[in-house]
Image 1 (cartoon, rainbow, N blue to C red):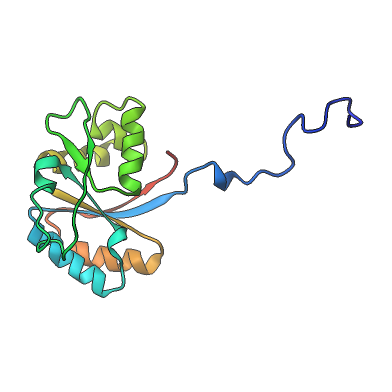
Image 2: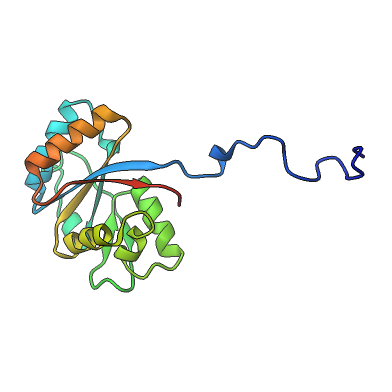
Length: 174
């Protein structure tokens, strides 16, 4: 027994590493494309700048994302994770990775739509904008950013090649 009269180990730990239990913040540059050819141009820019394929996350309607061919996405295959939000008319999917994990977590917590799921991290107007682009059949490319150089390269490419506005969004928490 400790001097306080409590058994050893009872009470708060003096130092706890919270990074083990908390999800790390994720930062993404996001752009939308009308077709896979537009996506391919952006991927070419970004890959030549040193970004790797695991930095790219695709979010869109299942039938749009499944229409990709290896030739249109630089030889990569696109396995898809279905995100059946009950309030969205079409089946939404995302390529496996941190974005899909976070969205699946929100779906599992009861988010009825993509907009509500994204609203965990984005302001309502931005969440609605992303949902509208997906529902309009656009391919949204989410590029995970690890540093300022990644952000600069991604923004430059997306501004030159995407079919709508470009944003940077932080996903903090689950």
